[in-house]
Length: 280
Ligand SMILES: Cc1cc2nc3c(=O)[nH]c(=O)nc-3n(C[C@H](O)[C@H](O)[C@H](O)COP(=O)(O)OP(=O)(O)OC[C@H]3O[C@@H](n4cnc5c(N)ncnc54)[C@H](O)[C@@H]3O)c2cc1C
Image (tube, rainbow, N blue to C red; front, side, top):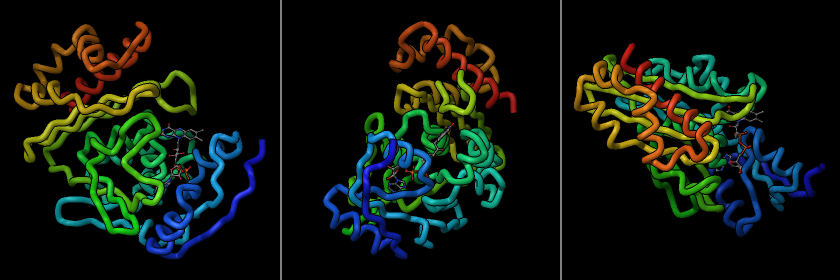
């Protein structure tokens, strides 16, 4: 199929871009890497009257390392992160996650902001940035606001962004040298989105521990009780006892799974992520 006809604008500033979105009354769509939007338009699932191409906005390409966090502009590509073109403030986790996404062709075009804004529950950046305790920086005609990535996803393909707002970028806290992380994804089909993702980040110097589970059918969830138990106990001992049976109990308790195969996939991802984080 071919996309329905649409107008096209390529603004040079954030202010111009949000003004275009506001004037369109919800009939415009920002375009980042086009890896999701273009197929949706070709399939007739999205029919915007106006495409607002973000590629000409320098602020969205910005990468800034500050004292305790890294800011990554929304149109920074997965490939740029995979190739180590950003400062490594997460002991390699961002780079590892970027390299997991789709194929190199997808990573060359797909962006970290487009990946989050799309609201796919199985998006790799959703789970990873939630585990890293990142924030989404949002800009609209009335100003800027910050939403923790943990609160960014409301439902499948529904996020905190209104049709008049843009995701400007994400802020990712810097991990201390003693931090540990693991990222485990299960995908049954090659070059497809994962069926299940489990991400664990433990940073003793910040007294923080986060365990996130997500997948193709569930928006990412912070497993708070599990994370607290992991933080408060001897992690290695906890991990050695966290077998598939225990992981299955947690998966079921948080409403993941469904049929036995799905449950097993989520439980496998979770138990392996916890073991790997503690083995580092
Ligand atoms: C074959 C294939 C395999 C893939 N595999 C994976 C995978 O394994 N893991 C994974 O996580 N992803 C995967 N993806 C998704 C891909 O990585 C992109 O992240 C995703 O398509 C969206 O990013 P994009 O930059 O292409 O955004 P676009 O397609 O341009 O936009 C997506 C949506 O977000 C909106 N949007 C974009 N940028 C902004 C912004 N700054 N502010 C507000 N709204 C915005 C658009 O209007 C649109 O609604 C895959 C895609 C393909 C085609």
